[in-house]
Length: 291
Image 1 (tube, rainbow, N blue to C red):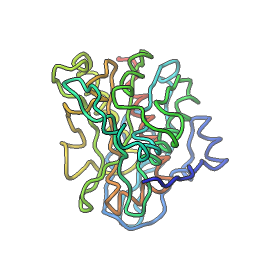
Image 2 (image 1 turned 120 degrees about the horizontal axis):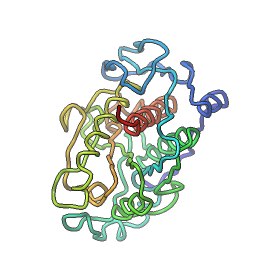
Image 3 (image 1 turned 90 degrees about the vertical axis):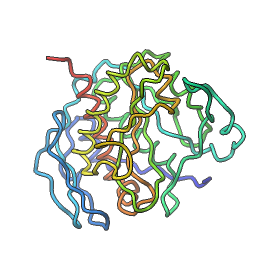
């Protein structure tokens, strides 16, 4: 749990294109590897493919091409990379109770890991950093709940407060699941109506959840989870980071880190970039003015 990981950075050519908000096909093609057979759905409305999805190693990979991120310009977006690399060193703090909207729960956990030892905290920070770069290049004001993967916390109530205190237009929390190895796929958690502060943003968060789901699925080719939720949406009333939010917010379990196919993607830098692109496209779709 205490292993540190060096974050994989974009190559020079891909970073240059990312700043221009145009990602060439070569920056988004996954290498062949074992895993379940997955079929990407038609691209969602803010994901503009430059070519049809293609199949490698028995699975369908997501679309590549331009991202239309204009709607995020000038918006305040909070990105919450789940857990933290130093949480394992503070078990007493992690177990301490904090408010969660309908009672108390533990401050946080250490998170999960792949069978090969890749930590969830390192994964979430990598994807969040990639997402932040895309959004900032498009003119968004991005606030991260943590700035590195070497610290402790913040607790779940503080993560929600960061979005609230900064009057964010939207917030997203990024995680990886630790389900049994046979289970695979992603799911988007949205707040349930449970009498918590989040009651004020239930409708907006559901719309956000569906757009994140559609764009993440289209961009990555990862299917919705086969073990939890309904068509990739999981309504929860026990998540402090969602319950305490008064700004539209969702939490995403990007895949099951214990499943070989999901883990192969989550440990691959190209696929992590695709995940960030899917989130960016979903956020842009949510922030697009109606009509």
